[in-house]
Length: 354
Image 1 (cartoon, rainbow, N blue to C red):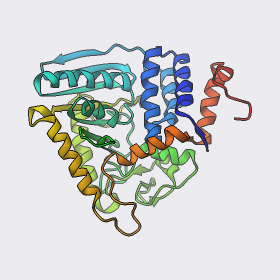
Image 2 (spheres, rainbow, N blue to C red; image 1 turned 180 degrees about the vertical axis):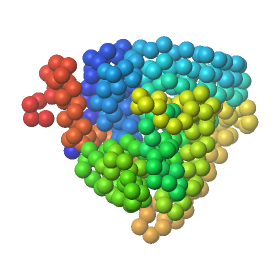
Image 3 (cartoon, helix red, strand yellow; image 1 turned 180 degrees about the horizontal axis):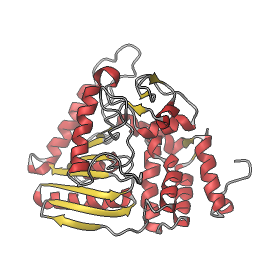
């Protein structure tokens, strides 16, 4: 494990994506999302994803510079075909348009289909919160290979199907929810594999449906459990089903798994203009008061105290901007190998001993 500055990781990632055929502007946007995930501690959506994305570019599963096409729209709704471009690019553009429509019409919604992995969902909902609006987004993996067993089952039939909401406030840190409807994001399992670490009980079952702490079992016929684990997983399954309907069926992607194995994030987003309901300044002030009211709760034994949603990520970002981002050796070796393959080792400052 080593600590690397956010600036260096951004430089490395941009150079690799450009070398793989990505337009400079797209590479910059993609790396803003990727490094942003690392900064807040969501390493599962950070630079560990770069080798996977480049592999997908090579086989045509991600198409850099792909067209972004509105196939249907009204004053308050939009349906976007991402034409297999980077999910970060397609989704951010869709969210910007949805915010613009909500600014004029108070509420707006959009669906996006045929796009690559969209990463950390709160990257998009926070765009709405910064514009004085409430942002909501859900995502599924279309008909890509699944990772989550529905409650009571042992075979993966659902995606991790995350949900995010962000709320404008007068707090120092952004207030938002960003959660998988599975016990853990699939990327966290990949991080555990890369770091050769076990996962907590209640996250993974093996191919026979037996509990395991070995993260490698997920890719050996096992499955993630839904949020709530072996006892309360019906809640996570219920949420995942709703996300699948919004992002798989409403978008037209469908359900199940197609033979190509192509990753295909479907997305549903909605934005609500706070001023349509009550004055924004009053609302932001009261949200802050509510969060502080919760934080005043006396801490339970062994606890660091109450944190509002998004606060721990803010603390991590302050620390990692100053002290660097931890990158596991396996991921660093893959980045170095990619740089070597593109003839970028000297330019990117990789030494022979790194």
